[in-house]
View 1 (cartoon, rainbow, N blue to C red):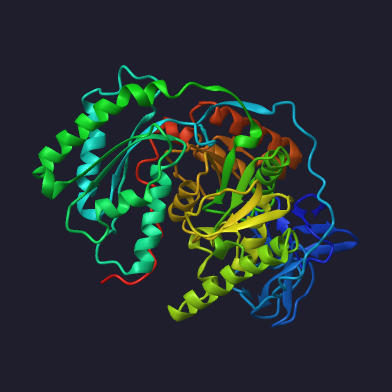
View 2 (cartoon, one colour):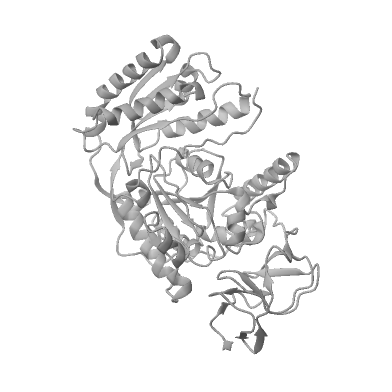
Length: 510
């Protein structure tokens, strides 16, 4: 049968199209003036060749090279890992700036949310007490403290407190300086997060990351309660648990009373952009829709930050062209170069990403994945490039250097001060975060139907029903304002957020 709506051609220069549904051998596709016989089973979201491609020739999607043909490919064949491989790609120069003015989207009807302005100028969307471990040796105690606070009902009379969260990890001792500095910056970023109003720091006593050294990194805003102790000096596990709980009891009235929501402008939002379990539709539905929502926030003076450096590899030119200065673009390219050296020194390549799940969903190479991932950032100019867990202090669109591993990446964004996270997924993700909430967006209808309790928004209709990206983007934007105002996300309702604290570990373990 002939079909002209079974595939989507993204760019007139592309060598492949994307299947809108499962295609079967024997079907005839009408694409422009061409009639293309389907030669293989092509799953939804996967690629089909539009014409013959010779071995070693480049293959384009989105108008950009996503790899080279491993063998001759015939029109109508499935294009994937069996016949398409990673290749080198054009690297932009830091001076390759596009000086065209950005035209932001029209200002939406809603321009405020209900948040809490802190006395240091930051804005909170949630209100937590954090129990912070300086070292893995005190992690169990921190977990027990958080669990006991709930079991004993300490928060029952304090409705403005969202919970007691343990910030535990597997590091803190036997670390060289570079790794320790990064850990301390990450821990300090959480302890001083606008959504944290009380901090209990617990160490063992003999670790490299000493409590007194850690406290020096934590410059909390005025009025934030802080307790510190070590298990060795306090008298062991039970004594430390009781001491920590007594400290929390003293904090509760002030933490509760400090949190009164008022109407706040969108300019006070700090949105972290992330994706995980991506598929062939991520770059066509959820990611560009999130990009539209991001543009709406940036256009009003808010901050939005893209991350996951390995997942912009191959698409870095899209961000370089949008950089507001050569210094910003050079900083971005320096991050890319560091990752190339880092992976090479460990005997790996940047194409170790995508994951098996990404490939099952139709993504073949990191070049293809990155072109879709960058769509989360919309079209706003790139104003800043941040180190991992550095404070997000520049209005507009930024980029943070993080791994592509979801919990580690989101941990960096939260440490930088993100008061909201939006996370897109095509295969399905169970991620949730604290102290800032996460909105999860499905890229396809099947996922939204399969994991309804985990997804907040479904962008599948963009692909299946022709719903406009801007329409879904506005839906995401409004959902983010609701989330910032206190409406619980799906992951919050399910109790996620305590186990996703995963600081990036770089450096020597001694």
